[in-house]
Image (cartoon, rainbow, N blue to C red; front, side, top):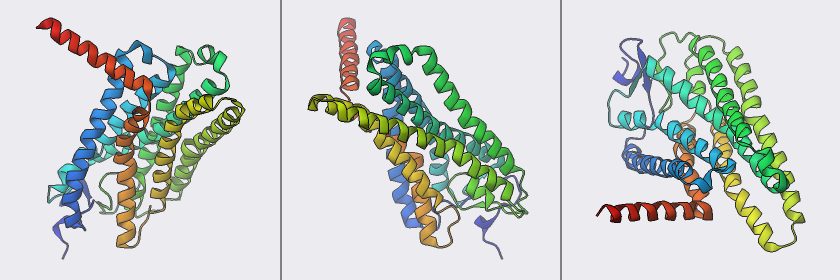
Length: 320
């Protein structure tokens, strides 16, 4: 006899197992995830507002950073609210339409971030290795074109993978071993040969992950060579501060994402838990940390915050 949560009474959606096998962990995660999600919303929204309102931040670096913050807002919102609802629910279900939307959006935003991080590395390469021609090369039109390429590439990959995944027969299987809908978990439900999907997925990994990583490594190899040529320690420190934040974000995002693939088809309970925690890390923790990493040692953002708060105070006093 099947348990109530093993399947749906009608094939109109999916069961998201999530962390239901660890009920004591769920309540701790509910509180922690809620706090992290609020911090993610506040931090990324603050960067978007500052980048828009302060004219001194109308530069390519902060244009791409605002794109990354908007992406992270959507990235976390595509999974976290549903996860919080399911933790408090006995059903732990998601509709078919909701699963399709989540699959398309989450994968599209994750793919876009991979490309966008390589674009940001190219921007830092031009800033340090071609400083005299920076404003000529990184003009507004090119910045917008690079951002569009990142978004179109990410969602094109997502659309292809989503369509191929949804066309697989599931033979009555609707229990997803995750807390959100993603391609690896969906492939495990299929009762047919998935080699076409796997080939396409590995090809997408090359285009979306390997090529951007190669571009990032190329950019930072040239940046490192240029920094070594700088005579003054102050100049080297400034160059390091300019690139250090972005490099740390790249390491966190790619490190957690690649580690997550190692637990794509977990066998043991401990492997399942590790895989889900890694997915939680790159789906929530990394987007929460991004604003902190970019602002804690960033004098421009701190100065912009002070100017904005100063204007708000002056406006408030003038109203009174």
